[in-house]
Length: 299
Image (cartoon, rainbow, N blue to C red):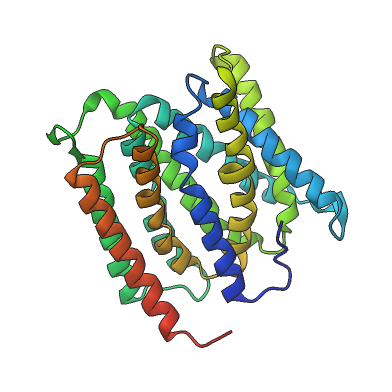
């Protein structure tokens, strides 16, 4: 678990990019958990992520004292983690994984736009162009269904949940800048609180359907260790100390990698719209990141 207390912006940004790479496995792992309901899945994966983070935090300077944070920090952390993932897992259960995942990946664009509200914020031409290309690619993936261009209203609840989770995650990510003094180790506590809330919601609203077989349990464990675990700690560092706008646009690589993994695992079918959308997403990320890195002075 990296510490963000004394770290250069370039290193923090690089750590944030690691989170983006890990998150590309989120959709395929979620799709591999079978009929496990959303709140139960959220509870299981965050319990794993929080427990692992707590074990690491116990051996870091300051130990578990990092969990002693003001109410505002807890509300931000738990609200963002619980809100996003409950909505995300619901979206992937209520709509085709590739399309729901693509809609949820509107959060990079929203991060770029929300970042303008940060101190010293403001959008450059490359951020706007890169975000626009990424948004266009995402739209192509959403609407370019295998049977032709269109929108299936039968999946509207899943699409709505996916859009809502994009808004929640962008707000949580950009809002992290106002909690830069909160150590990354505190995320372990946020994860455990999220697991507890999800567990209560599961008992209140869902039937209990446990993962069936070793492969589904392995997918749950993979979620807890990777995209619901290590990625959060890395993202926390990137958002608090790194280049928020650059990370927001670079995150457009997630839909491309995510869709390709879904196809490889047999959860989605490659179509011209997916190919074209992925190409636009990659182009948007390159416009915003390669040119930015070339122009920036070395840290």
